[in-house]
Image (cartoon, rainbow, N blue to C red; front, side, top):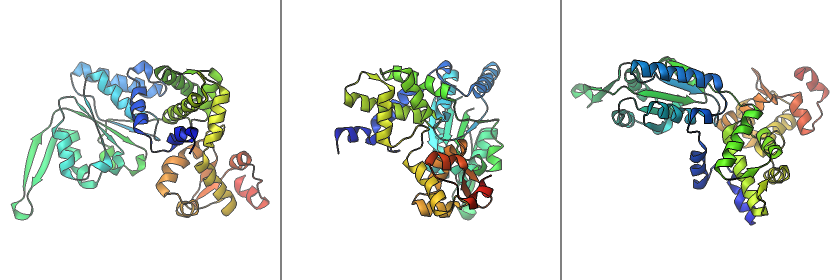
Length: 344
């Protein structure tokens, strides 16, 4: 593989250790550095200020929305605002009640426990979490059978911030124990451009406005993707010996990575083309579509579908997914007469 190919290989969803460190560096550290989601920021700051006046921990907060929209960054900002430590965990990693008990008993007063993918918590751990969130009590069952006994432990006043990409998969009892629930939306192009300029300053990169706009329009309206693309463009510019990122450099990078002007990548196009060519534009069920594209159902649901729905390239119906006229036009397909009535 060429040096250029090696440098740009990191476009793979599995990011390198360097990328992880850079992602941490690019996280906003102050409220005015967190761009976008204005209404949510205002509401959260009111919650924090009210809690400070009462000298209490802020109430539990649930954040939901697609990956990469800033849920973890918000948790860190809340922690900084109240001067608390933020402990990070994820629903799938909390496998046993003992795992959850270890997390909760290691919290200090007003600490924050951030649980990502909280919809994937198992039911046993959820039931332990209910009294912990409501009464700050940890009920542990010691032993089994007739010899089993219950031990109650007092917990410090802490805040749980839950994050999920699937609000509907969260059980009602758990969802109802969050005092505030906020949905993070996709960003505007102008907001993504501001994020790109900020990240470029942190990474010590010079970038022209037209180049930043092209990256923003191809970012799937998601900050994490925008930063990923910026890093890949930076790699390309360095290999080319360029000190300033121009629109031309961005376009060359996107051509190499097979990313088009609205951010569609090879996987996105494969999904749409499969619906159009193999299933006459749809409708097609999720399982069938996953089998036809050799993709996992969860990958289609979490990675591809949210953006394709957002830009109006697919529709979800009772019978399955359909490609829209916008998708046909973008990919250069003609709508067959048999499909015109269905798509009208």
